[in-house]
Image (spheres, rainbow, N blue to C red):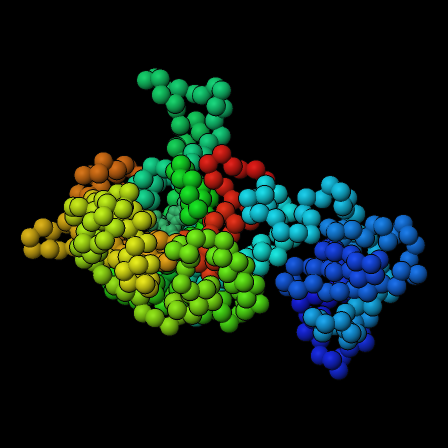
Length: 483
Ligand code: 4AD
Ligand code: MG
């Protein structure tokens, strides 16, 4: 007999009741030696299995504990109890995996998210984490759907790279050298010629540079994979290992790029509302409870589902970095010295407090900032032609979201060989590693653009989870690589 998922069992039409099903899952609770609440992760809802305790010996009944894994064969019947349409009348019951109720860390009560992080191998058995992970799955699927429908090609860019895409230098080294006995060259430096690849390599910080090569051949492309950053950021929005979606399009201007970013996020929010209603409803209620525990002035005006609907139904505000600086400079918190980083002169990088002010207080909607100072952005961004100061700003854009801050970063790319080479040299970047990237500008260069959406930040927005460590199965952050 094949297993029926509880999600499917619960959808059984009344006319088909009375069938015998095989249900397998984990016990959430067992009451009165009679009612087993069982969950198999296919849905938020448990199935109630009703057992006639005269039919089973005491020893078996004792083994039905919270956390135990059961295989149950039984008849699906209409439930006389409130709160559930159907229940399972147990005919056969097998205990696949015992669970010592005394020691099992997941008691049937509310646990803090901090505690659950310490038992990340068991936390998918909670309502909150399982709901988040089902939504995470739905979003990954929707991302491929969106791009496939538009004729974009999914490119698998390498995880191990020899170039530093962001020029930031916060990378994890990949090596097979014996760290206790490093080979040295004549100058006494580590001899990477003896390393596995015959050179220095790292985990990628972004698939962008490589996917650009494919955009300049296949037109519309994207990459979606894990990326790694060794920055020591202990925040609720940073991970050392996170997933990123990076579309890259030939012949796209910065404006085309912004249009795509907006359409993309709206599509994903709409998809979640349409396909994840049950889990969203649960998380919405969860978030409401969390809000109640905050001081009034920190509570958000909209609930989770309202926020998603708001994104779907409203155009994002677009303004230049220069306009944003003007607004921030004149803002009440700046004048009252409430910002940790005061905004005074053009050219300073925006901190998350500034981004959140613009989104949450000033515009009260998602914002796209564009045309940033070249000095605070990556080398590959296209220099704007400005009569007074060419190259002073670049065709960059960041999409800023309530509660999250930066959710997308992107730009039009510098497609002019001479301009790009000059920038690489000014910034002292390793020309020898970037030769192939520069060559793309020599052989049939084309205007092109792209952006990166942080997958976990998207999931934070869609699920309302405040800490990024709770939206990825096994989070990696400074000091934490358990599991
Ligand atoms: O702004 P970033 O660094 O841009 C890039 O990597 C470009 N190569 C993207 C491109 O144009 N193809 O990162 C893009 C997004 C950010 O907006 C943020 O959402 C997310 O990636 N991100 C992180 N998410 C979690 N943890 C971190 N440490 C992150 N760093 C960036
Ligand atoms: Mg960025």
